[in-house]
Amino acid sequence: MEIAAIALLAMFSQMERIYMLARAVGGRAAREARGLPTGRPAKLNATTRAGAAQRTNGGAMPEQVAAELGGSRSPLHLYRELHKHRQHLATLATDDGLWS
Image: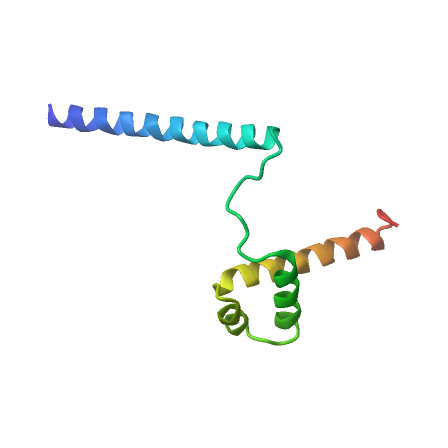
């Protein structure tokens, strides 16, 4: 009897999890359809990100730059890796003649 009750609660929990994810996807799609932003707002604006990327690419430690900006180092690493990836893609595209 106890095992059946626990199994039933686990089933309801799993169903609620599925419904919760579906509601989140639906809400995100509705915001995108209305042209509203989705996700968490960026802590650093474009100018600050560019300055931080320039400083970290110039040899400054991401931890030091993040401490001066009042944030954590992980966004700086992510922005730097994203910038490197975009540069790499642009290089590949121009080398292959796709964008030129």
